[in-house]
Image (cartoon, rainbow, N blue to C red; front, side, top):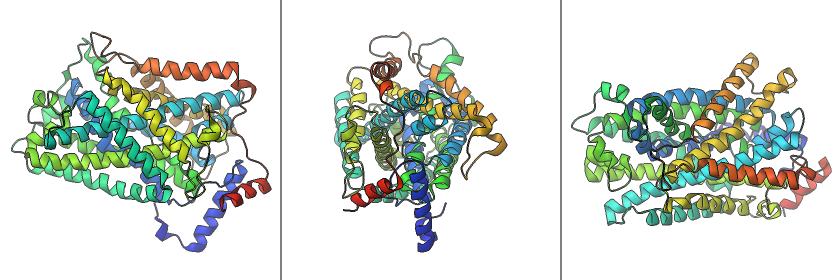
Length: 514
């Protein structure tokens, strides 16, 4: 993964020219600033996966849905299955390196009814992107609230959490407004923050606690705090911790119009972000689980964040706060990158007229060459999705489930279509060769399993205050997109729109320079 410094200026110009030419072949002008290196492309997906966000924010959920056994073994199982999905996506990304990503791929790969495949892939991707942004910044708000409670007595109430949630989203919207170079720089910093953060947290939890849990506890102890009688069902629910964390790596595809050597850098960004996260996340989860001092006390913590209590029990209040700061920093970087990727998807989908008010969301800020309006739609939509937490105690689990279902359906729809293409698929420079078909079949099958699983209730008995509203959110979006398609869009939505001839594309690019 070379940085920009490893590429000479002539090589950079040649790569940029080739990238722009390929984008022209796909029908689009080079409107966005192509300033990201391969490392920056990897960094944004790695940052959105963010083991210090997903692993920690859902750790308490994992403690009651299978406990240490599922936390420990669920991670590598889900990680390997996610790698199959990522490999299948990466192959398609290499053929079609555009900001539209998944929905563009679906349109090009569908043997028939391409616009319909593209339409629904795009809407599922939109739902998942908004939900994952909500989940990340919601988690950051939880942890920030826990720190403020410990430091200043700012209690962890739903109202306070939603307030902090809104503030964090607003800051991420503002940061993304300043342009892709700032986001790219912070994304690069984020990689090292995450890696060093995991090493510091795990190192501290290994060295300083006076006692540790046994290997038998960490690898085999099963906990069921859900009210359901079936341990198998509860264990499956516990996979959400890992599967939610392994989301957002489609960001590498959405950022390809801003990346040098995109047809290779984008696929590598997808795969490497999953692999590095797989290793770092497992180390982190093992470190935390071995360091638990009081299991029930962590679950009942007044901070509302079990990992915060585990840190404090193991290291004391000062040490616990320092580890919390590391986690909050990582979650902040993660949310910033998620807003970036979300806005690029909104920009591309609007460029093709598929969202209400597309003319507004597709507008490019000529000074920064970024889709500023799309940035604020991403932040605003995420805030709305998190509001049910004010009256629904399990809303966070629902938001994470929505993110998984929306994103993974969008991930595998083009993979499924690529399978139908067989040998007719035009490979890019990065491909799987003879492994393409088996990898794709595994990816599609796994997605079908988790789509059903994460719509199921997580707590028994089911009440109005704890029901899993994931199916409702998914049905609302699917129903809206379906009705709009049948009533109107099927008459005018033809899939991704090309912007014109080579001369017209050049004119668009020339206009953006002034």
